[in-house]
Image (cartoon, rainbow, N blue to C red; front, top):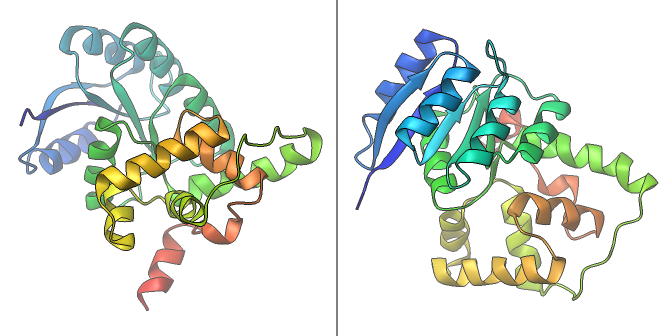
Length: 232
């Protein structure tokens, strides 16, 4: 199997070095380049054609949002995974609108970052649980002002269960293992969910599912603290 080609874009050299060391331990990944600012990131993606870009938000010359827009316009098949210290809802919405496939905080564990890279490489969307919660809290206010179009069809109990697990940040593989289903079955259920809800991504389905009552804030962990509590 071909390795996933990853490029790291961050203005902190220490973080780039640490991330390179982490990813080079994975047999299915290789780091093909590093960028220290947004302009360099855009240029290197054109040259190196990585599968995934691990992108910071705040960088010199071009921000992560601006760089993501330019990269996705010229290289739509390249997945952008945001790794940042910022969880501001404006950044989250801006990056999703720019075409980012995922959003993780730098407080994420090493295995979460590696898993997220594999997920966005396979076409999945990834959102940090805290970011998801902030996004849904924002939807609470927006839904009060803007009526939401209803889905074409009601979701089945199994589809609702899968949508709620997706809202918790679980990958297709995690959902399949938890529900004792095949990966193909989980993907088929997600495809049905997207069709019924007239959505094109997990994130959009989660947001719309929240507006229609399929997903609640109780389904979404509040962040790292909640994971720690679950371990106790």
